[in-house]
Image (cartoon, rainbow, N blue to C red):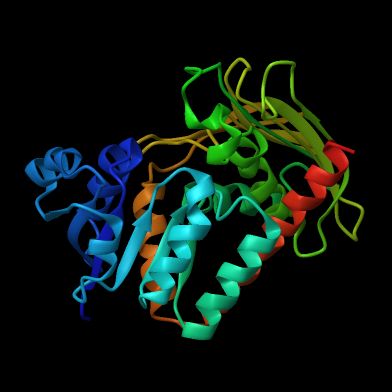
Length: 322
């Protein structure tokens, strides 16, 4: 199979520390180079990973050798540069969130569909093998009938200059850490998931929400309670509470490559810790992007998932700030 030639828009930390090491293990892609408005910032990338340093995003997008681009820019820039990449006939791999609004997401998806190009939103945890392993335990009746889903993701306050606290750059807890439990709840509840209650908290002096919570339900009556925050003690967990037991996973969103996650199963028979195989969710996500590029059916499925999540996020905002 012909390798897909890929470039990167922006010299972000996640591109250097996570994306390129994972990409180097992926035979489906050939790394071409990285672009920055300051070409000096591309030098560490060139020295460590090879490739070319581009002095502007436009220069990379007009390089006809490139088939796809990775966009790890601040969220407010995803729509602008996603559209420019698609208009230059490039498949796009975007860090979450896909965009900062439902309207922008729909427009970007429509353009991708028109040009028959693939899009991919990088919620890596969906591609970790621990998630299907947990779903199998649930399907096998290990906790009986599912009564409640709880998911939480949050971390301590970062620097005031961090883009997450800047409204103009697409900051806010919901768009950052909140997207993870929203995506997980949507995955577990299925296509009929809807937001029923929500709360977004924006303390005085901040232009964005710092923490929040929501309840989602599906047509079967299953409920997910989610919480998130970027001014909280660290939490990264999933709890499935059933009629005969309870299952918890404490690294559901952030299990790093090589880490063997542990699922704790509590029933009347006692407590069991199940060590699951280590995996590389970033690598799996990149490979998922390659499959999407090569499959029109997967492209349509990915677009539907992205739009459904954007609808849930918009509804959460409407209820949380109402």
